Image (cartoon, rainbow, N blue to C red; front, side):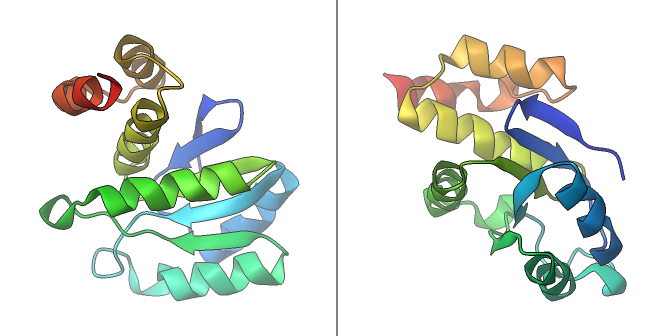
Length: 142
């Protein structure tokens, strides 16, 4: 499993498996967010399986499945709520980490904690291009 830190307290990756939870805990993560709908996930890595491993390890787990066909700002609110409640480090996963980064970026814009330029640059530094959601970032920060 490889992951990328978007900030000091928020990292993303592609699909994880239940056995990856021990590494995440050892690396200091306290919350895991699943942004991948189960219909996309491999049979051995459904959200329920990762949830069981996370909760057994004492970690908080949130299912916040994001598909481009069914996007709503409730997803942003869910991601933001999980990030704000956690005093430690948050780890989010989907298929590639892209959707997790989109939700992070929209949450930053919604709270106005970063400018759209900062959001795009921060994501870009980790290999995620948020330019395509720039209009939404701009509208949230106006």
